[in-house]
Amino acid sequence: MLYKQLLHKTGITTLAVICALSACKKGFLDQVPDDRLTTDKIFKTRENTLNYLSGVYSRVPDESYDRFVGDRNCGPWTAASDEAKYTWSFVGSNFFNLGTTVPTQGYFSGPWSRYYQGIRDAAYFMKNVDLCPELTAEQITQYKAEARAIRAIYYYYLIRMFGPVVLTGDEPIPPDASFESIQLPRNTMDDCVEYIVSELDKAAADLKFITRSVYNNANAHEYGRVTKGIALAFKAQTLLLAASPLFNGNTDYATLRNPDGTQLIAQNYDAGKWKRAADAYKAFLTQFVPGVYELYKENDAQGSFSPYLSCRNVMLTNWNSEWIWGRPTAGISVMQYARTPYHSGFANEIKGGGGLGVTQTMVDAYFMANGLPITHPASGYVNAGFSQFKAPGDVADRSTFNQWVNREPRFYVGVTYDGSHWLNTSFSGDVITSTQFSGNSGKKSAGSDFSPTGYIVRKNMSTGRWADDARHMVLMRLAQVYLDYAEALNESEPGNPDILKYLNLIRERAGVPQYGTSTDLAVPANQDAMRQAIRMERRVELAFECVRYFDTRRWKIAEQTDAGAFYGLNIDLDGAGFYTQKQFETRVFNKKHYLFPIPQVELDKDKQLVQNSGW
Picture (tube, rainbow, N blue to C red):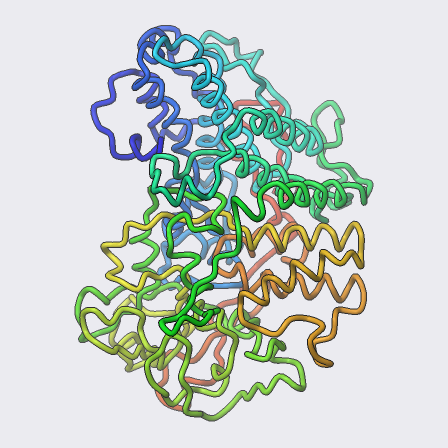
């Protein structure tokens, strides 16, 4: 695994590698290392060459670090969506929710500059890797393809945040470039998409077709490296983004033009973009499923299929059959601290901050065990009182608030609620988390380390000691590809049987009845109904995986989902009062917030750059 070397290596001697590792705050136009003086050293040995390639990989985002927005290229995605809320005021997502961010902040200049550093370093690597005498022609082809794919992936990350950006070309900017020569305008969104897609196609032609046996044979050095499957999955995601309402005929961006009048986002809706995305997903599935990727499934101790264990451990089992893209060196313990309740009075090994609270709207989004939403008359949902109930993963029946009884398995994977049985029993035996005011993880006991909603995000939590967890971080998995494909196909060819097939495959693994199996779960009757079913499924299947934030934006629904009053439980009370809903925040979302602003520092230097609408 290439960039594990980089993140733990010290004493790197070449100037260019040091520059690649630096987290300097300059924009991409400033990042011109003195490569002419160091090329002979970087590419003289295999070790130095791979160290440089490690630097290219190092900008892959570590989303487990999201308490510190911008560090390690992580974003505010989970707690800046309608899924969650951080209790700690310093966390960047809180400023996004209040609408107080401005273009001068590092939340925007950080990822812009670091991704462009990675783009520049990838171009430099591709230009010079042929000079290394210790690499075979086959190795050079492979490593060059990896760098090409990573460069395209970084452009994808940029356009989903900023919209159309500057395509810098294949030639690294020379150190003596004139000021005039680096006055670069933004390319159109269509140009950016075509470039990313074409580069991923070129890379895929030379990348390894890694089968499942490679991972099963514990070739850990392969983890995190770009493969043919990864490149083509990102190609399909790029096309899905381009087809979505945010960029497909969005007249809100009618005035977003370069100084020469070039329209940056096409104003005419193109249905063909959905078909192109659907075709890319279909090609991916045909080539890689099964054989390379498949939905992760796990049996319980009795040998029976367990939807709960399957949905829980797909996140925890490194590089299992469902993982497509991930980061090997992730700050998992940082994430797990925020998701481990405070647990006053118990062993330190199971005590955390518990500060990432689930919103009530996210809690309500999960289906009932019978597969129906809680709003359906036949769902069986009860909004008051208590019942004896044994939750999946628990060891006993417990008095449980009826709103949380008989929910689908993914609810118990995703949410720690008052009265939950804690996952780790290694240090204190059975621990019951209480988030009420005077509870072991409540506001009175926990100081500043409590949930602002009375619920805590549980998904992706280890069953062991949180501070010791050295797991890797999944960034894309097959379930998302299935739902992406269903969405693209529903928009391009409503009624195609593959739509229902892939939607139901997700529900089957989740342990909820499939559409078409009962009168109450009839197949969605038309394109609109199917669209709603797909979106509901995405919301719960991919909860807390940095997907919802981008979904609500590319669908252009964030003005409804991410604005206004947000509710949790009444964390200032115990007993019956705790179970009443209480507003914890009023969120602000305006049209300008669909895209990040171009960093002000870049606008000040490059007079050809234009700011995103509304900023």
